[in-house]
Figure 1 (tube, rainbow, N blue to C red):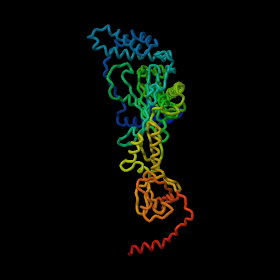
Figure 2 (cartoon, helix red, strand yellow; figure 1 turned 90 degrees about the vertical axis):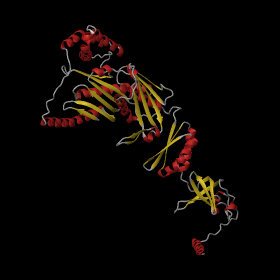
Figure 3 (cartoon, helix red, strand yellow; figure 1 turned 90 degrees about the horizontal axis):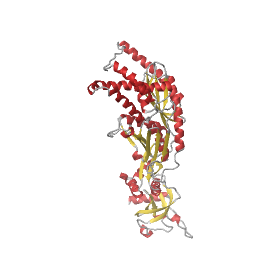
Figure 4 (spheres, rainbow, N blue to C red; figure 1 turned 60 degrees about the vertical axis):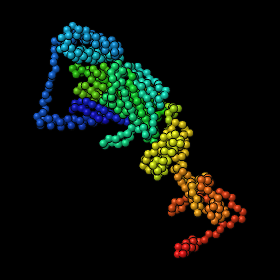
Length: 554
């Protein structure tokens, strides 16, 4: 949790956490604030030593006090009536704009060159803003007629886009987010290549805020800082609940498209993302929801009110935008910015508790729509199977220059990735059809399989040598079938055995040389022993060594 503030109040809170309770979070903020006070005291002391403790003020505004008082006197009551009318966003904006235009119409074009900016500023700051704030503080009533702790009607749906791996549509009042999920392989993970950070990111979230979502007609250009920040907040909110690594071999991408906006679209993204992830069959640990809290305060009267699920106007004209996301058991992410001198612990505690109740209310609606992640992925989602192989077998699966793995992918129509982790290799096989995945897995298992003594193998004769034949019993694994183990009868030459290169033959693994690790095969062990067969007496090892030495001397 990152906390900023002055000696007296909290100014900023931002964090990513794993289901922290409101009490723990408030305690952490208090602890951080105590340290902030120490830092502020040092800055104040330093400024006094340097003689910079007197703050200079500058004002370059041009004001017309008479015009300001006229606007307040003539337009405040009318603006208050509009604020309490409970109309929708665009209708309310049109009514406020018409009221301002009606007042400005009394001046000539020449006069408006000077007065138009002043009229707009005075109307916004002293009429429109004051009317909305006073209505909330005095009557407990908001622009759309809600109570301070009331959340707008919510409607949601899953599987909204039948061709997507997962989709969820979340609508809260005049804010709507459509989230889609795409599942991919390790090759689809986000690559991080920074100065101090290298690696990959298995879960990514992209947030799009097209101009039409706010009723504007303008060019859609590159991502703004706002979009990047909102997307990162939603990513932080969902990340602790998404299984990663061996629990979930898929690369997960969530894309949130904001279709309409009047209120927090980042919190709508969290809710829509939860729906889409569960619709996709991602085994989300717990559903996550989010809510944006606001604040209206008056320093003169000491009145204040915390608002649940704020509107765009309440964010713009209010004092705080405090976003809180989490599960039923705790908070997963927060982000707060304020427009006043700071928040007291009393206000912060009230905002956290009100946010908790709102978050649980939204979670009830999400789980009514889809109670848990789907038991299986959708039929058209490519399947991904993950197995582990010994570390020293990774090279055999890849092959020289990637020849082996490329051949498996080409023949089975799958995508295979291998990563090394500690003392094992993690193999992901990604394919559309189960039969293709099974075929690729079978090939890999054959390559990494360890031959067992006593097992029978159907192998291919790779080469013939004077003392026997080399048989491939597994992909990449050859062993010697000695001339004496081909049959019960004795062969003087390999030509007498009748074996040819390329033939298939059944062999039994009868042993492994302790020193070299070479495998010993036998075909005769699979044949019935002839009646009256007498095993030929083998010469002692010393005699064989002496005979070999004699040959060397000759």
